[in-house]
Image (cartoon, rainbow, N blue to C red; front, side, top):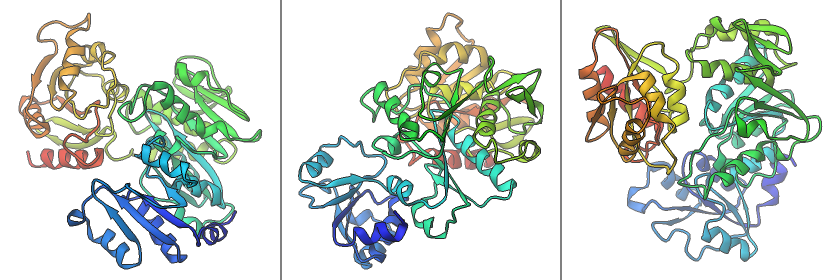
Amino acid sequence: MTFTDYFTSVKDKKIAVLGLGVSNRPLVRLLLEFGCDVTGCDRTPREKLDAEVLELERLGCKLSLGDGYLDNLDAELVFRTPGMHPGNPALEALRSRGAKVTSEMEVFFEVCPCHTIAVTGSDGKTTTTTLISEMLKAAGYTVWLGGNIGTPLLPLCRQMKRSDYAVVELSSFQLMDMERSPERAVVTNLAPNHLDVHKDMDEYVEAKKNIFKFQGKTNLLVLNADNAITNDFTGNGVTRKFSRQGRADACVENGMICRRGVEVLNTADILIPGVHNIENYMAAILAVEGLVDDGIICHVAKTFGGVEHRIELVRVKDGVRFYNDSIASSPSRTIAGLRSFSEKVILIAGGYDKHIPYDVMGPEVCAHVKKLFLGGATGPQIRAAVESAPEFKPGCPEIVDCENFEAAVRAAAAAAECGDVVLMSPASAAFDQFKNFMVRGDFYKRLVMEL
């Protein structure tokens, strides 16, 4: 179905858009453009709405706001915001009355006219998605980068050509009720995450499987052979695996990333730090196989400086290097960050509780951290994990509990000496004090620059 066909087909339906955040606002504009009857639903009370939402109302969008924003909702077609569980009672009630529940991303995959490559995983998906995009752009393709990475892609479909590539990052929330899969899919790894939203780990894993569940025989699935969960996945088409620890379609041999025996990239040429980024490169190399020459891949590795908030060097002050790894909202992500440095670091961690275990962090913190500054709801859990690790000795590392995030940053900076690395890698979500990890990262950078 084409873009125009889809929006013309829903013109006469009562449509509800649940959540008026970044991804759904362009969707509301599109629906209004095609003359649809749209109700925008958001928990935010009217007095706290921003100007953009009020402008949607002026354009014809009806609003249902506040605590009861889903009460008595009448709709035939419902667009779910990614953060709302598909099993939400209000959604179930709408389905029971005959409503179809979909999402902006589901419709994008239905109407997208160009080639699609999508990436998911617990860690590394943004960097891998960006690497694939950079490699394709360097090879001369027109690339549309978006999804969970920040840019809503559905409104851009009218500009896309068949020969273009849409490179999409997909979260478990976006994937939960997806019934379409991309031509090329990558799963970087899986570890416990977002268990504050998913009812259990099984549901989280099943959501991730939707990225390849609906692929055909000619489609490509790229998997991490070193991750026990992803290594057991079985796709419908061609499967390629990467491994940093053993033999696979892409692996490391004598410091070189090889693709089925052919040397592609010297790991020493990868500009962004960390062994986890070697894995991200292997995943990207397999994803663009047949599309991008190896020479272009090498050029990208030597010039790509990384994605903001991902082990981002903020400043060097008085010989102290300050790094922003705000994207690290899970223990596995922080562990990867810690392993990126040869020396022991000063770590700032803690934040919103997603109900995931922290025991795996204990040994890693003992091995890679000399001073640990904790705050937020997960601070006590991280402390307990470290102190219960067999490697822990009182004072090694030194652990300091702080009142809040800002206090932790300032205390860590005050404790740092010339030659130290201060790493903000929270192993926790940002929602206790910040709207998202990007706001947290920006606040951290501002604090560091004010030192």
